[in-house]
Amino acid sequence: MANLPEKATHQQTRAFNQQLVLRAIYDRSAISRAEVARVTGLTRTSVSSLVADLIRDGLVEEAGRGPSTGGKAPILVQVRAQGRHLIGLDLGESHFTGATVDLRGQIIKSDSVALEGRNGGEAVQAVLGLIEGLVNSNGASPLLGIGIGAPGLINSRTGTVRWAVNLDWTDLPLGQIVGERFGVPVVVANDSQAAAVAELTFGPVPRPDNLIVVRVGRGIGAGIILDGQLHQGDGSGAGEIGHSIFGITSTTPLGPALPPCRCGRVGCLETVASMSAMVAAAHHRLPEINDEQALIAAFKAGNEPVRRIVLEAGQMLGVGIAALISSLNVNHVLLVGPAAHLGREWLDAVRRQAQWNALPLLARDTRIQLGEAQDDDVLIGASALLMTEELGLSLAR
Image (tube, rainbow, N blue to C red; front, side, top):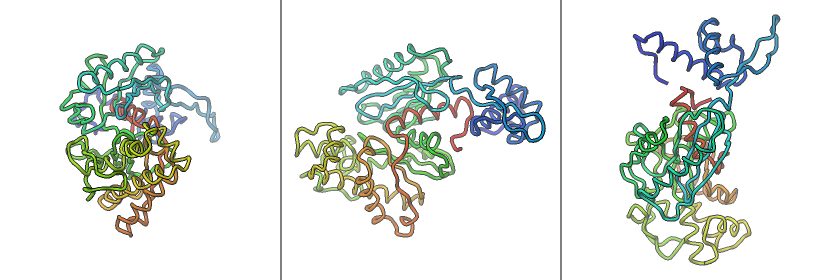
């Protein structure tokens, strides 16, 4: 959240203080007004007035009494989860998925639409239609805004999709298009970065200040959290490891020859380690395997050709993760996305290769685990980013 301007007006000062109070209540759940004053440094009189405003606005509610410290037991306040709702979208897979989400990251209603090869303008219309359905199905609470997680290079400051090769979007002002259509604030972020925000904001407590979340689905990308904040890089492309080449330029165990990547090059990590790459390799050998669910079922059933494909793909993913470990020296790495359903054996293959390829001293201190927010991580994370923009909440807890 930005610092208060030096010559702030009374209205700006009050809005700034209201965000401080709301953040204190959100981060600590049920809390007394006196404790809010202690945490924020505001006077008790100011806090009481600001809390009253938040209650009238439907964002905060009273939650009974806390323990007494000698006098009258204090009345506790908490964020009213249903006080606002958000719409979160995940545009990263073969289905566009959307959901209405409350202020605690709980999904109220979800919907999806099959992409079925649509791209360009047709894919934009699919996005608008999905949002329209969710808006029309909403209950009584006001819509705070729309958060969108999309593949590719995203300029989150302008809401522009700079490049999403699988959707044929280049310099698409998606945030502007959606905002003008529905008349609410819109945040657009890279899908892997949104997944990292979901783990940071709604995953189990405590979470480390530094975290790498690698999402493996149709493509591969990493969301990077440094000092409790999402790191997007100078060009908003931090974590785009799926289109990096790690010396993988010839025949691999996944097939007789590497297929060209959607970006036009040969040897990108996602052509050998993504779910789409694994499905394609398995389908080449076993035609009955033609989607992710079939791949996962065959792997867990012990099908040997599929096991070999999956585990070798995991090893190649480990090569990419080793590069992240060595360059960023972040000790906590989470794997999320559809591939996480492959489970512990795939995870172990990733771990072993990452530890082998990274600098041993750094690898020794690194924990690679499966994330918590698996299937809805992108849309929940995009919703969390919208909350930080509109309510001034902190991602770190």
